[in-house]
Length: 214
Image (cartoon, rainbow, N blue to C red; front, side, top):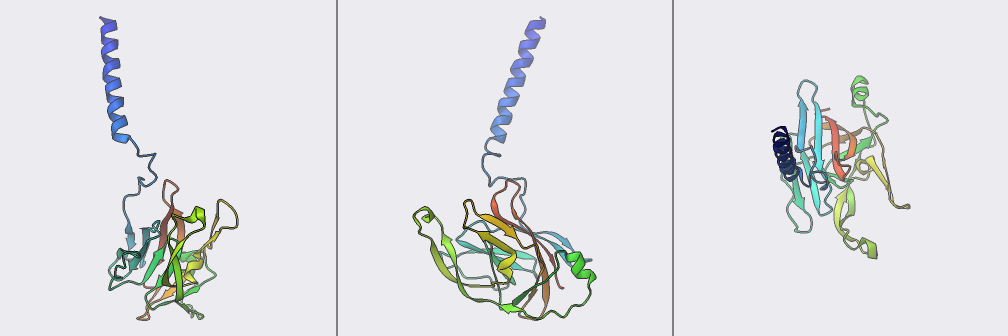
């Protein structure tokens, strides 16, 4: 009798674990499937005009557009020639950045709290976007073939990340600096990039802390 009960319990346990394996299958094998399921403005603190933006900028063929006014994030496919959103303030392509007729200055601050504590600062030396290009197809990289598309780029804001390709694998270095974005309407936002990977260590997933309006 006891042996029968033990066998029955073993059978039930085995069936349960098999079911779990089916449910959990590929969760850890696929780097795109992570505990982070929300994108966009994932945290908003209206009392301090601050928050956190989390975007998937991992695709080379897409720009990710951030709209502070409407707290909205949108994407367009570069290769398909999709139109930009009507309203946006800055955009990310992997580690490249551009603005919507804005300009950016890199500050000496490495904390938004320190920037806020410094009070009103009359920043100068804002830099506008310039004509440039971005890589849109890396499939032929091993053969030395990389496809580019013309694009505006803000070289100051793009300094938030330095990718050293002189070694393999490349070395990724964040500036850890606060950037102040001055928009076309004169309003400003402070941006601090704090991460470039998702929980599965896949690169191109950006976490950005902000103050808007600053």
